[in-house]
Image 1 (cartoon, rainbow, N blue to C red):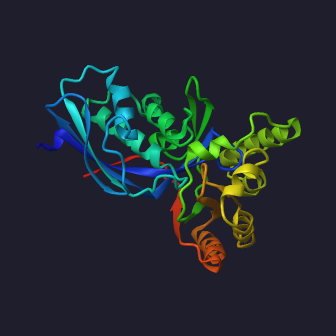
Image 2: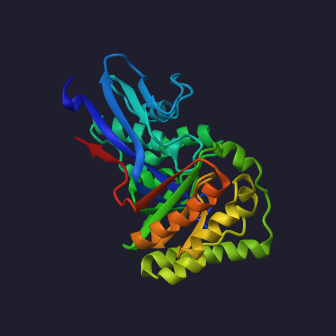
Length: 310
């Protein structure tokens, strides 16, 4: 098969919510992600080829990648079909955007093989079809940073009014993932449908301050704004030793720490790699003392998003 008939991608993980931005804020990770290969086929439609790494459904009606791809192809008259191979390196249910990586990678790759009829921002709409199945709600806080890179703000999920935000250069993320699975669908089910006015005021104040801090590279303001008064009090109950982890991160010098997406992964943002690694060691000690298996990751902010591999 000729190179022009297939594309190989690195589809990165992402952190959503970032404490104060439930369902609207996210940033893209750098070394954490899946490898996807998408190939043209003579058989119409979208099909799953090889799956490696984590187990995924091979039924196109149940796989997030093919669901998103079909949403794109419903609007494009393609003379050929596509086969998708996935090396799934982001564990599903880990809280670092596994389903978003699959959905975004599928529509990105097919769009490229079709001659790029859509911009990356326009692709978010199609990828949302897969994300909606995975999480039980259509939201783009993971998809947007994967397709656009860096930090993103979803002003409106319905109209997909998405804004790419600047990236303070010294930010480094620490991610600790306890080896348990927590589905977004389940972690959303415990959330309240009403929010006390006092908490809402605190939350939108922090969200505005966080966005301002990104533009001004004000690390102190960014640190003060990374507080969640709405979602974290409920979801933290599902994560072992959450408060101890967050306190360990802050005491080790993190600017802020919180639940990555719906969990169970916990993220921390630090100024500089040295501090980020000190934060990681402090967080690891909590789970080592608990004898809970875990993984630790360090990442600068990936400002590019999905990368084409040659």
